[in-house]
Image (cartoon, rainbow, N blue to C red):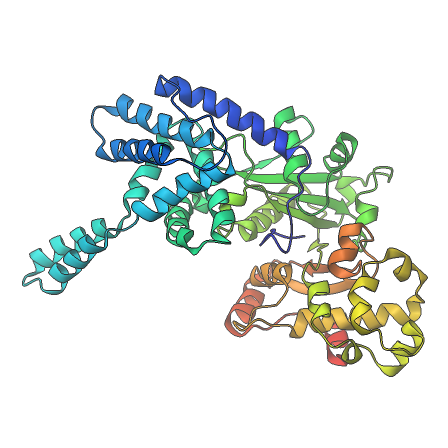
Length: 475
């Protein structure tokens, strides 16, 4: 289970997503064209010409001038947004580049306001200078972006714009300041207090169910039957929604009600498996959590989601005693590739697993082969690979002291305990590519969440169950 912390850790499943995006953009352009009262957008593909840039610059300045009444302001913002939505990738990059280059903080105004603040002779003049400095620090593009909030689906428009900025900023640092401005806006708008938790059932509108299929980022939903199984009587799906995006899940979690802690995701996703009586279930397994909006990357509410869902489930299903995840380990294979293979295995393990020959640099490729894993003697392979994974999860740290693995960092920082390492728990192509088919249970014990969180956040301590501690010591 993961919050899809970064593209390299968890790529979003595409599914029918391109179709969803195309339809949404087309519908929004139609709506905003009606508000703008005209259609002056550029039609040619490719980069923007000097004439295009000049026209868009004039549109931006007109929006910032804010002349006329509210209706005029909405029409100008709608026309500008309609222009942006009609551009291809190159055109949108040029459009956003214009805002990044020409509508950031005004350095001369900031310098003057800072000087007046530092030299203020009285409390009153210091207060006025402080207000002036605060206004100078706000980029003109921030005032522009907030105008879209008044338009239909304007919040979603800005979330998607930030997703494009994240793509462009990966190769061009001139977008960093723009990204910071937009992140600050969205962080305020998406404060957890504004969000609504909803349960999604099979009776939900078809367009919402289609979005679950498109946005699922951990275990791809292969069909409508697969989705129906994930919304069956012994399953739950919860999502956060924002009032400005009432039909768009921000993040959603899938839960299986089971007897005992699950150790194999294939069993959980088996559409032919008999349903568990939810009133008799003693364990809730959080097996997938997906961020649905790429533009909200870095604005996290996944930890709040888990805790809220636990509270809801406790009330709904009193028989539940255990709350745990069944999570992938997305950084494991990458880490293995950075190690000297000869330091990972003992001599006895090398003999049993590799006929006495050190695995060499081909180890990572071998671990991606389901046939190779299936051919191993589990009695030798299971303890060896569990020990290596325990070493990675418990001892692998970033410079900051946080866990190397993004999913581990997410759950540990939310107060979970690293409970168990499961061998051959996900033999799908993705499971093999990421973590050699292994998965992890993180346990959320309500009476120790805060203590675990504090231990991890203050000193980087990984609170682990006895079996994992034992494996880590052997490492």
